[in-house]
Length: 149
Image 1 (cartoon, rainbow, N blue to C red):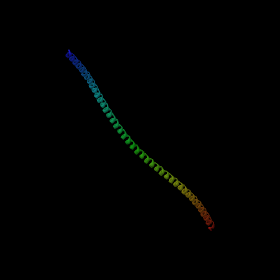
Image 2: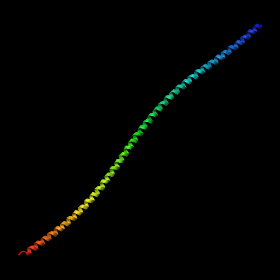
Image 3: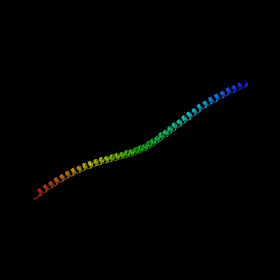
């Protein structure tokens, strides 16, 4: 009987041990499943991160291109502004030159008018002198004619 009790006790311990191992095996299977899910999630996160990095690099490259284009447009604009300033300076110089020519033309017209007035005055004087000379010649001619015998 003791032997039977010892065998029964051993069987009970064996059952407990088997149950413990089955419980541990089930727990290990749950852990394996959780670990596989974690690895899959990490892999998914890594893939998402890689896609995000690729998108960020593409956005950075596009921003660099836009910055480069903006710098090029700025340089072109500065060149055009410099050209406009040169044209404005040339136009101002041309306007000043025209004003100088207008002033000189006005001065020349004034001198011409003064010369014309002086010439007209001289002409009038000459005409007066000529008339006076002509009258004196007629008077002389008349006096000579009256002295003829």
